[in-house]
Length: 436
Image (cartoon, rainbow, N blue to C red; front, side):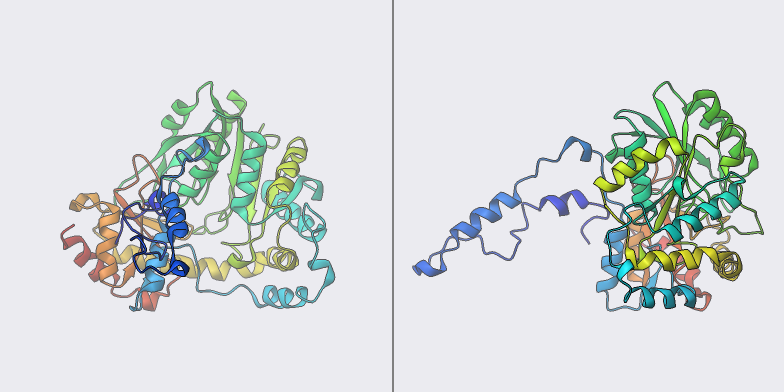
């Protein structure tokens, strides 16, 4: 196994590999037709270190793709806990609407660039009901997935050098997007107590704001911890945003995947926040429409022209055949979502029982939870290697946080049934006992 998260080496070529399927030895056979010198020159050029643009200086691999590729290639029946996939299909109404769209001319079009009117209306209605703030289709831009919407929003709002406050840990892909937009991630810890839920360090949040801070990018439930911000947390966030004139980018991809019968608390509902909160939702997590690649940006009117401009310069248009299906899924989700959340909670509870007595963080929602393995003299990458030998694929958290990073490994519970999760504790115990 060649190092988790070492994407720089993979992207730039490994000078010692002699790769690309070419024998680098000189042609000694005397046959001019078999002269490979030109190919060798190309190979040697490729093997030289690529000069990366400055904006990619701190862009790192997220580890998930590496682990997924290993599991895909393994002859073992791997327990797939590494990636935010789910084994539960979208609602049948979504699938049926997608089949119909394949044959519709309007779904096979670039237009409208900002997204289909029907989906924009449904997204506006959904966020209006969640926040108590009135939005219309003119406040909505459809994106090619939630993360595309986040990048477009960052590009439309963040200046080079601006600080963007995020939690520690947070999804490495969000950190990378902040950096691509020229921003600087500023981390605020979630407090960790083994066996307990994660809690936001509110004092640390206040201390993180500087004259360079432009925005906060927050997610609840948070990824990868499953931490949920409570009313007091959002109240503190709102007070700081209003006091320091900050933008809040709310990643709402999993906002209704809440355990313990918690209710959604949306930050736009707090005084002074409606005009400074941009909400990015997605069909991937709550609606289980990962392959459809549909998201929505719901923003105050003053932000929309720049978000549209960036969207047209980036992906241009979201997936046509997916948008009406996403509208169907979102419009009916109040009725269909509870059973799915119950199943996620059942799986999360089962893994928590399996991890009882170990230093894990209990998920309050979402799709995943973390185990701290540094207590056993291991880092996340070493633990991941050990687990692979036992038929479990999980992602190390290197690069996902400064305080809560490489000491942890993540278990996704959205993609495996409770039946398949049985026996996980024994495998974890064995992996913890292995030598690094």
